[in-house]
Length: 125
Image (cartoon, rainbow, N blue to C red; front, top):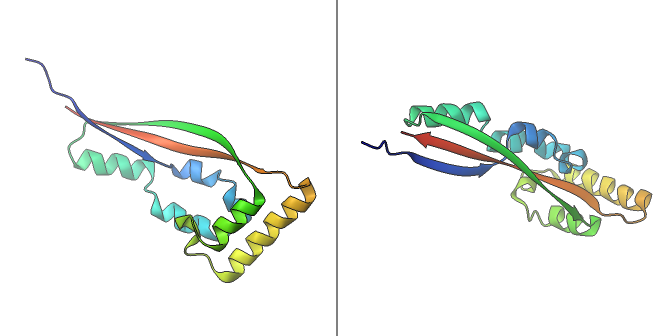
């Protein structure tokens, strides 16, 4: 008799990856909220073990991309990314000032973002 294997895959961001996000260098105020939004790897393991899954594996991957300062300022100001929703006016203003300083200091260079994700594979069976 063959044993049936059931699995699920989740794309998330680990706390370690969040701690390395460059956006928090400009907007540190939003970091704590993001850590609360994403469960830790240990939390995921606990959740799926309680649900009956026998194994949980984490696979990290990343993608390099570039964002212009102008685009990032617009994204922050209109709070296009959900991470900006809890930011105070003062925190937003300080972050935008840092971005424009980077723009001036680098002659308008784009900001390198390394987008980091974690695939979470959970196996039952």
